[in-house]
Length: 128
Image (cartoon, rainbow, N blue to C red):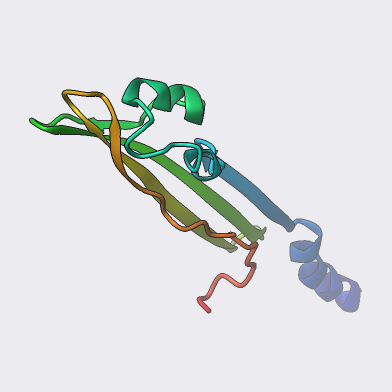
């Protein structure tokens, strides 16, 4: 009888545990690919939301230029859930696409297109 009780004690955490996967995206990372359709010196600032299919998440007005920012992020989380202990790991990539527009002519003057990152699923929660 003691062997069965000991076996149940060790098997109980295995039977009540589970794995967890989750993903959260803020805006569409494809916005970087779409930004390649914007031509500085030709594209109007009023056309940018139509080209990118989104409104800017940040507007910074200035005297000569206004800056439009399109922020996006991707987070992947996974873990092992036990009764008393949970081990999770979350990896996040967040970037902002910046577009500078001339305040007088409404023409895009410059852009900063951030590099793209492919976020991988990582299980080990204790660092690299």
